[in-house]
Image (cartoon, rainbow, N blue to C red; front, side, top):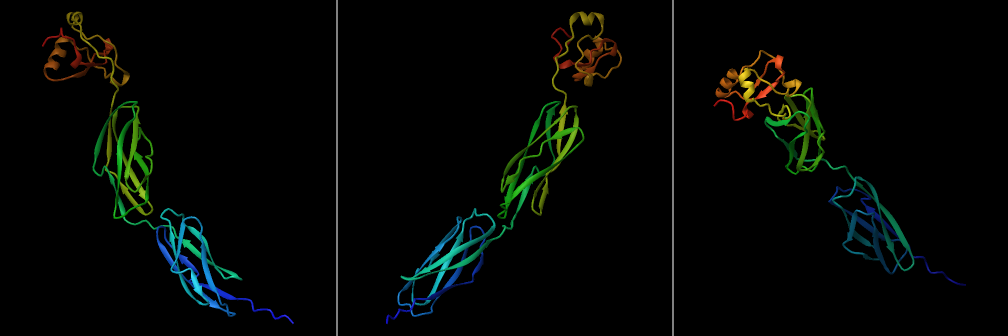
Length: 279
């Protein structure tokens, strides 16, 4: 009669079997190995963890019965979620596997950020052109979130939405207007429950440069202004300008005036008159 040797039986139990480990942090569990049927050899421990984790034991060999410590470290860039880690104990005759559930929580943003320009500022621009203002985000007290932006602008001013900034950095606000004038815009940066607004950014929009008007000698003799109309937005109308009145205004420091409607001179750039005018 053949007598069968008893099968080596042991149990492997983790405590705790569930861990919560933040990105970049480490968690620890303990593995209890219990000899259930007189095993005489050693139990060898191994761990299989998903990408984003590293594992380490304080010992990988348990003689008959005992306890081992398992450390699990999550990568700083691991995504939030639930992960399974398998631990296997092996003897010469048997392998037993147990499972550890690891939860990586959504990180809670800490710290704060500042946004600039924090005080009122002015950007000079011409009609039809796109002009930029730099928005700066500065992390404070360990802030590591992403800041997104909204823009509130005056009617007539068209602006883009600046690109998001993570932690610290700069982004560009680009605005344009078809008509001259003074326009106001503010930018609000938001990250989670944090929100900060820039100071008022004023866009001073002036007409794009036109061809210069010049006063010629024969115009002086006629005593009137002639030239090409600079543009409808620059033509104010009014009574006919005489040469003497133009020269008088030049001597007084006036550089731009509106010429007579009858002669369609428009806005006359006195600073660019020719050298034949009186001085």
